[in-house]
Length: 151
Image (cartoon, rainbow, N blue to C red; front, side):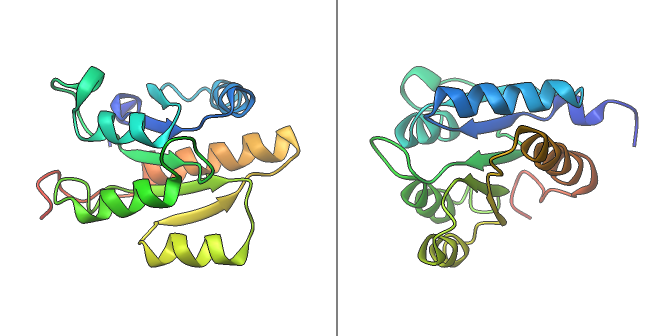
């Protein structure tokens, strides 16, 4: 793979907590992740971005991975995931649930809706930063994403 090909792959971070957004950005910076990060502050904004609606209408590529919190205003993360999986354009889009919830029902529901991964946010910053680095390494460098046309 040519150097820096992962840098062009966009990360969509769906997170309403400004502190968690800042921590995620700091963690990415700490590990020199150069990928552009789009932040959606709620489920509606995330779907608008992914489906090119409203303020996000226009031509932009789908992200390489979606980091999705569950507890979101306006539209929760599980409903976002449900709508992504029902849409032909986003049905194969890699979605990693990155949340503070370790409730068994949330984990089960996430996987039933075909989340690709479920990660409970570590409380310690260094553990969180390491988790973000591993997410980047796997989803943006090692993982072979499905073809953009769905196959």
